[in-house]
Image (tube, rainbow, N blue to C red; front, side):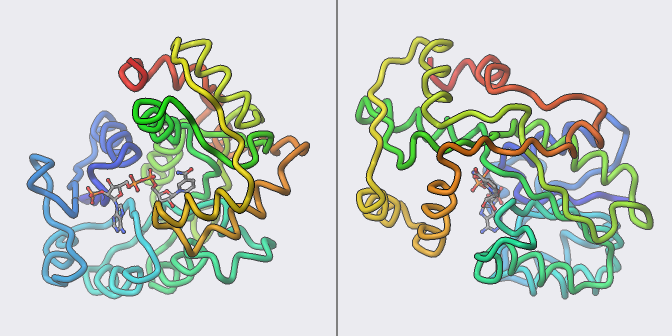
Length: 274
Ligand SMILES: NC(=O)c1ccc[n+]([C@@H]2O[C@H](COP(=O)([O-])OP(=O)(O)OC[C@H]3O[C@@H](n4cnc5c(N)ncnc54)[C@H](OP(=O)(O)O)[C@@H]3O)[C@@H](O)[C@H]2O)c1
């Protein structure tokens, strides 16, 4: 009854690992760079034998995936007899979103969900941990440069995503989570401008918040290597200006506690802006 956790070096995977270990479960951690993560096994899509080895004896998986590799994962998990997969997806994959058909997370959900095991899709909105990227920008330039500073988000703490994943994995396949997508948010809607103001207030960081035009953002986001999602993201942020973000109930329903606030996230990560 081993549970495989992929994306081992990621913040969510680390929190899922800790939660499952404290619940007494047998876990195996997989990483694309096992040399950087002691105790992990290799997870290399260019080497299908690494997937078979990592999945040997595994009944459940916490999965990071993308469209180009999701089909390979589904075949390997099927061959290994996996019974449940909890996929870290995104709110952008939700049904009803006009952009969903071309959304990489929606494509990944379809490919992973084609396997014979039970699949649950975790669909978080913006991560509070995006503030780590802002901290890099502050150090490098003294600025945070974002489009649509007045767009409302309900950012979520990585620990809340992990708590939901742990709940679903501990409940196991064959129940209410099979085939379900869970949109996940934090507990409060905040503009990006308000997140930056709170960050400055709590951490003492000094920086200039630069509200990029959409055209400026296209140039800067392309340079950061996310061309496929730029137009969808810009349209989404534009739609959220003046429109408070709905707060999804799944974190509270599945974990029994309210979502952690951005203030809590900042307190939990004192080193980020030190
Ligand atoms: N940032 C947001 O606001 C947001 C919102 C909603 C959804 N998401 C989605 O959440 C996921 C994680 O995002 P993140 O920014 O926290 O994580 P990240 O730093 O990009 O990646 C976290 C871990 O996932 C593994 N990983 C990364 N790319 C991978 C790939 N192509 N194939 C397999 N494993 C991969 C890596 O672990 P190893 O190197 O140890 O294998 C990495 O340490 C992404 O799919 C992202 O689109 C992000």
